[in-house]
Image 1 (cartoon, helix red, strand yellow):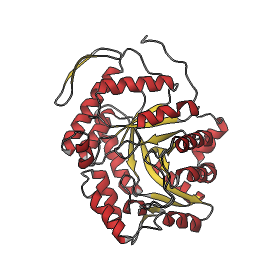
Image 2 (image 1 turned 90 degrees about the horizontal axis):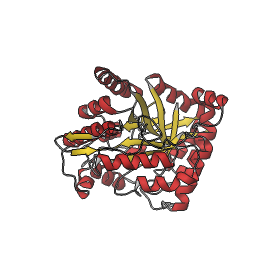
Image 3 (image 1 turned 60 degrees about the vertical axis):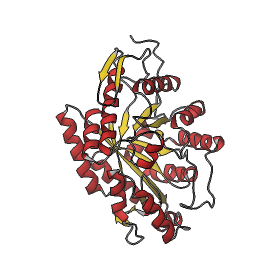
Image 4 (image 1 turned 180 degrees about the vertical axis):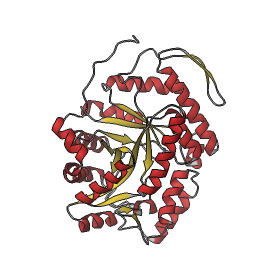
Length: 371
C-alpha cells in the first residue's frame, strides 16, 4: 500500500473560502511540509499543476535535497510542453533525486484556464493529445529514436540520451471518468487514480478500466485521491471537518458552484453530483463527506472519523483493488501528523511495512548511459 500526502503549492488553509489564517506557499512552508512528509513515513506527495499553483517541476526540484525517501508525484499536463522535453525533464529529475519521481498525467478540465495557456481543444480532443503524448513518451524510454506523426503531435528522430533510474520509466498516474479517459488509462497508465466516491461507484470504474486494460494485454493498479480528517473520536473528527467551512455562506457556495459549471470534466461533474450544491446530507457514504466540494474544485470528498473507522473505510477501497492513497487535509502540516500518528498504526499494510523496516525507498546508483 502506498500512502502519499499533498504539497499545497497554491497555499494552505484552515478555513476554506476565507483569507482567515491562510498560509502562503512560501519556500520555508513548502520545505517544512516536505520534510514532515519525509520524516513521517509517507511514501510520497502529490504536487499539483495549474495557473494558481507554483510550477510543480520547479517546486519539487527545490525539495529534493531536503528529503531522502519520499517520492514526488508531479502533475504534468500534455499539450503544455512537447513530450520530448517532458521526458528529458523527467529523466533529469529522476536521476538527480535517485529515482524518486512519479508522474501524474493531467488532461485538464477547465476550458477557461486552458485557453489562458493557449489550448482551445474540446474535451475529447484533449484526450487525443494525451494519448499521442503517452505513445511518444513510452517509445522514447526504449532508448531508440522516435518518429511520430499523429493528429496533434509530430516529431522526427526524437531521442533520449540518458536513461532514468527507474526502469522503464517513472510510473504514470492518471485520473479521468469519461469513456475516452478510461481508454487512455487502459492503454498507457500504471496507476489509475480516482477522486474518492462511494466505493460502489468506484468499483464500477475500476472494473471498467481493468477490463479495458486486459483488452490491451495490460494490467493496471488503482488509487484513491481523498481528503481525510481523523481524530481519536468520531465527534472530534467531524468537528474538525465541518470547521473548514466555518466562514462559508450560501453566497460563497453559489459562487464556487457557478465557477465549477464551466468545467467539462466528467470527474468534476461526478463530484458536484454528490452534494448538488446543498449543505444537506453531505455524508454521501458512511464516513465519506462531500463538504469540501461545495467550495473547492478537484477532490471534493473526505473520509471523516476515528482512526479505526477510517482504516476500515480505506480497507473497503483496498478490497475493490486500490493499493495507492493520495491523502490531504486542511491545514496540511498539522493534519499530516494526525494521519501518521493515528491512522498509520491501524492499517495492516502499514504495520507490515514497519515490521520490515522504516525505509520505504532504497536508493539506486545512477546508470550512466543507455546500456
